[in-house]
Amino acid sequence: MMKHRPCRLAVLVLLLASGGCSPRGTELNAVLRGDEAFAQENFEEALAEYRLAVRQGADDPNVIVRVAHTYAMMGRVDDSSAYYRDAAAREPDLIDQAVADLIHLAQDAYLSEDRFAMATAVEAALELLPGVGVGPLSLPIARHYFTNGEYGRALPFYQKAMDDAADSVPEVVFEVAQAHEEIGDCNHALVFFEQFRDMVPPWERGEVDWYIGTCAFTMARELRGQAVEPAELFQALELIDRTVEVGEPRNIQAQAWFEKGEILSELGDCERAMESYMQVRYADQADPLIERSQSRFDEIRFGTGLEHLRDGRCR
Image (cartoon, rainbow, N blue to C red; front, side):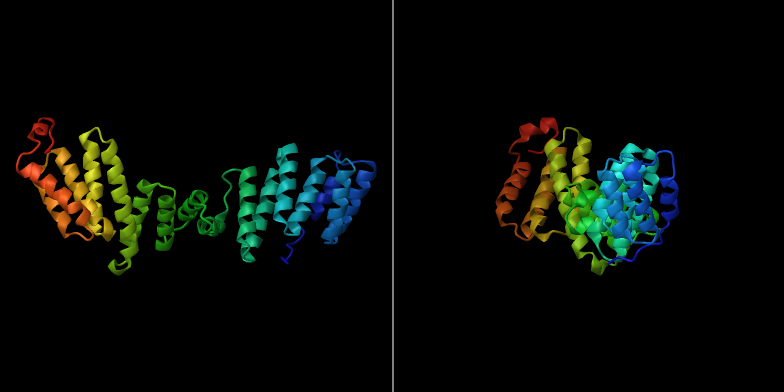
């Protein structure tokens, strides 16, 4: 059971009851009874009366917002969110109150370690007021989504957390990199993996080197597959060089050296291409590529395929 916050809107709802837009007749009686119960912090009774007023035909947003606020005081995130959406749709001036209540709900849920309720409340607040700041909740929400495999939803909150922090924490930088990698965005993932690598001592780089080598290799092959300009091939070469430099993953080093030879061959750098093909045999798990790399080496060294030199290639 969550601890109730002070009834900071008790006076407000009582004042609203006397306004010109107040419901009449039976609805008015139910609202007044609800306000009295709310002032006494009897939220169950207040909720029953407010909902009775709604059922009796009260469509005044000030009645609907009473229901939403009472649900918020009871810690019921989903119900409060639904009624606040309804109230805000009828009266946009109520959005600020709705967002304030929802952020308080998120904070309470965080303190009670209910991460799902926390995220639900924040998402509802952002739906009503996009861009609203969630302060220190950004990182817990990001990690909640990350843990549940919702990497795309986690990233904006990671960004907010990093923007608010004076210094980036290595663990957060690594999680951001992993989130980008999980959604297939190796381009941004590499930036954060390299940043993390610079933040930790050499003996803590094993895992990040694996990610760097994997992403760099994947991007190099994609670039080479679509390259139409030398600049793209040079970019692919830089990436494949990074895979070779970090030496990870070990089971693709033979492929990396072979890919480097292919890129250099396409660029017309025949000597370096032959050197790369020769390196294949020294890499782990190279057997499937040894024969192919030797064949490429021989084509360049002994002139097989020299007709291709006219377009700047070695084969």
